[in-house]
Length: 290
Image (tube, rainbow, N blue to C red; front, side):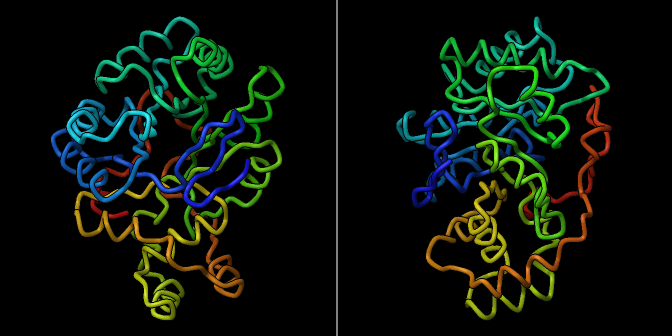
C-alpha cells in the first residue's frame, strides 16, 4: 500500500480516495440529496450497502451528478443473509440494479457472521466476481484478526480493504498493524464515534489550537494514521466541513494525546455476534452526525 495525496493505492493497484462519504442510516429518500451534495463538494468515493436500503437513492444521485463514472469510487456490501456460494451473484446483481451501475469499485462482505460459517465460501465467490471484472476490488468489513487469518490461510486473495468501527475511543491498533503487515487498507466506519469524539475535551482543545472544527481534527487524525475514513451527514455545510481536512497537519504531540483517548469501547456490535439479522445496532443515532 502506498499513499499519494488524497488517495491510497490498494494491494491490486487500484486507487481509492482516502476520504469518502458514508450513508449508513440515511433513508433512501434522503440519500439522493446527501450524495448529490457530497459529489458537488468534491467527494468521489461513496459508501453504501444492501442493508442500508438506500442503494437506489445513491444511484440516482450518481446518475444525475454529471461526474464521469471513471472518476467515482463506489462501494457496496453483501449482507449476511446472502452469504454462501450460490447466493453472492444474485445479491450482487440486485445491488447493481438498485445502483444503476455496470460495476462497483469495491465490494465488501459486510460482516464475518461466524455463526453461519459461510464467509470463506463467500470470499471464493467474491474472487470469481473479481476475476470476471465485475468489481475493481474486493474486501471485507468488520473482520477481526482471527477472521482475516482464516481467510488468508484458506483462500488465494488478500482483501484490499477491511472496513471496521474505528474512532478515538476504539483505535484498534493491533488490527491496524495486522492489516498493514498484509497490505490491507483499514477503512474507518463511524470515524467520529457517532459524534462523541467531537465533544471530547482533548479534541476540542486541539481544534482550537489548529483553528479547525473538532470533526476536522478527528478526520485529519484518521488520515495521519493511514486510515480511509467515511464520515456521513445530511447537512450540506457539515458535508463541506468534513471534506476540508487536507490543508493542515497534526503534530506528533497531537497524535500522542489522541492515542490516550482509546478506551476500547464499541458503539456497534461485536463482530463475532452479528448473524443474519441486523441486531445490535442503535436506532437512536442521528444520521446527520459524522
